[in-house]
Length: 114
Image 1 (cartoon, helix red, strand yellow):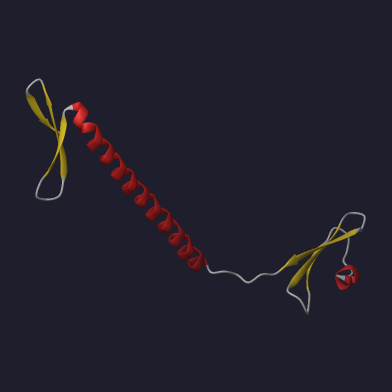
Image 2 (cartoon, rainbow, N blue to C red):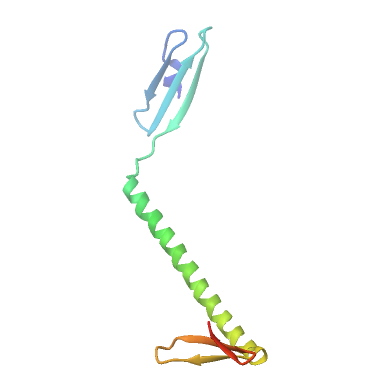
């Protein structure tokens, strides 16, 4: 920082100064009156965007799997509640050979498949 403050530049100028020992860049600027301000910036290694994209995809995939699990759980709870209420509404749950449940409701002597 002392070296950046001591570096002489003209009026209305700016310059980037590199530190020889640390990963720091100094921006020295002067205004119309010749008064200087020095700002220090840390240099960090550049990360490849492909690495960041893969991490982003993995986090999005994890979130998607979590949403699917929630929907499967909610569907199971919904199926249980409809089975419990089917005795009171006149609906019967039947199981076919493909382990698929279908609701058959009877109203006024007619049969409808849902």
